[in-house]
Structure formats: structure tokens, C-alpha cells
Amino acid sequence: MYSERASSLPHVVAWWSVTTAVRESRILPDGCLDIIWQDGRVFVAGPDTTAQVGCASPGSRCFALRFGSGTGPGVLGVPASALVDQQVPLDALVAPATVRRLASADDPLAALTAFAAGRWADPDPVMVGLASAARSGRPIAAIAARCGLSARQLQRRSNAAFGYGPKMLERVLRMQRAVSMARRGSPFARVSAEAGYADQAHLAREVRAMAGVPLGVLIS
Image 1 (cartoon, one colour):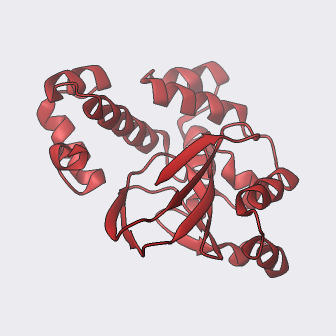
Image 2 (spheres, rainbow, N blue to C red; image 1 turned 135 degrees about the vertical axis):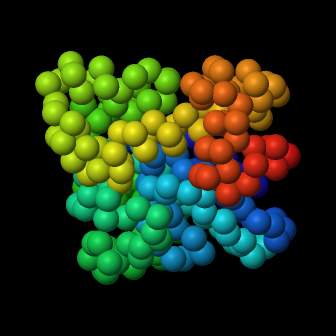
């Protein structure tokens, strides 16, 4: 069972899950990082470049905040590039006493939200615009040009906010759009055209590279 809702914090989604049976889960890259409470353990799931595959035990519970648009690094005090493709115990980043309070909280989601609110720093507005453009399939080069950023400046700020550069962010969020369309029943040829791929073969290569399985297997 999985549920999510908008958090009281901007660009943040609150989610929770309970595992009812042993099954493999495949978590796709999404340009975000998460702070997760799982059965009393609190850790950070950094931004991914490829799918993470796991298998939780029946009865396992998770409560988490998913930080989009580059909001997570401000809360954690580290650039997203330090967390790419990693799961890092939260007490490696903040005071262990704070993490112990989170781990033992009666309402983990409320505790995580209060923790994040107390450390909140407004995200880089250029990176918020960059993420919005990438999610909608608009060219992100226009964002950089409008803000007067050089390619090097854009790369550095994107690395800090998302863990990787703008080209990788575009690839990740394009795949998210494609998978969402395919799950709604769109033919793969239409998905490739509307999501911004050169052709269906390009779609197939990109999904397999980042998800680890073909698109048909992913949505089955």
C-alpha cells in the first residue's frame, strides 16, 4: 500500500507505505531526494541516475518526504551531488540526537515535516524554474540564457541542487513523462514522439539504461 500528498512545505511531497507481501520494488530516478523513516531507521535516499531495486519484508512501514526542485540540499546542508545514487544515514549529516528523536517519534511524518521546516532554506529560484521546464519538456537552455548563466555556472548550480547537470535532469524527467504516458495506455510510438525522443528506439534505449528493464516490463 502506497499513498502520497502535498506537504505543507513547497515543492515537497509526503508519502507513506506499508508492505503487505514480499515483492520487488523498482524506484525510478525522478530528480528528487527523500528523507525516509523506515521501521525506526532514518536515512536519506539521494538523487538517482538509475533505478533502485529493493525488497521489503511484510509489515515494513515507511514515512518520507520527497524534496523536488532542488529543495533538499538546503535542509540537509550538503549539495545533492554528495548524495547521488546513495542511501546515507541521516545521522551522518545532522546531529545524532536529532535523528534519535525522529527515529522514536510516534508520528514519523509529522516529525520529519517539523525537522525539515526548522531547517528550511528557500531553494535557488533559477533551479526551481529549471526543474519546472524539464518536467514539462521545455528547453532548459532558455532558462539559463534568460538568467545570464554560463554553461559552467548552470552545471555547478544544477549539480548542487539536483546532484547532476541539466542534461541528466532532462533525461530523468523525460523518462518520467514517458513512463507516465505509457502507464496511461499510450502506444509506445506516440510516447516517444510526445515525450521528446528521436524515435521509438531512442525511447527504448533510454528507459532500459535508467530503469534497468524494457518499458513493456516496467509498466506490466
